[in-house]
Length: 246
Image 1 (cartoon, rainbow, N blue to C red):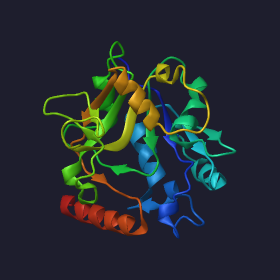
Image 2 (cartoon, rainbow, N blue to C red):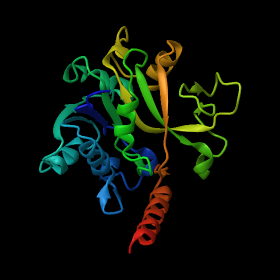
Image 3 (cartoon, rainbow, N blue to C red):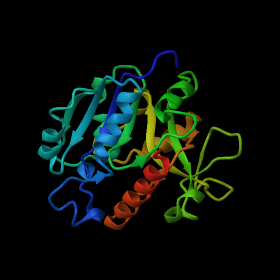
Image 4 (cartoon, rainbow, N blue to C red):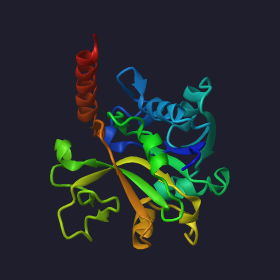
């Protein structure tokens, strides 16, 4: 891609039920990992990659998220309020008018990753993008490197390949998990009925058309789905920062 994507969508509407009781009075994206909320970590990555505008969807305790982001100068934030939860696919589809005919990033506000030696994950995805053959790029992380996902991968990706195969269609055990970041072209939503549905439906659509690709993640990735996992992630990140300190 000659030009980096300037827009993104950040999924922040979920209730985070598995995180209770921490999410009884706080939306999951506003939980802290280290000294930053998970939502700010996602927006920081977008800002570093040159994204100018991010749509953030709101549903559960959305007023708290809106208040938290009021003072953030970059990227510019547009809120997409959902009266009823539209899930990950339907939520993005309602905001398509913001993206025109250009590819844009979609990030989960509750996934924590770090860039590896190859640099910014988002910039690498943009460099990989080829609109003539791609509708969607997923960031995939080796399942073997995440103990909680041992034997529970999402996709099989052969050595040297860049087209993943979903676990139920693969001849080999799924060896990668979907890590959250994705780069998508609006045309992928063509012919899709609006409503509440999972973005996974679009993963399958792109794969069936031969237009689903993957980037291998070379950094760290943290499973943050429960209070215990959040505590473990904070401990691991603290140890990582201590090790890097001069």
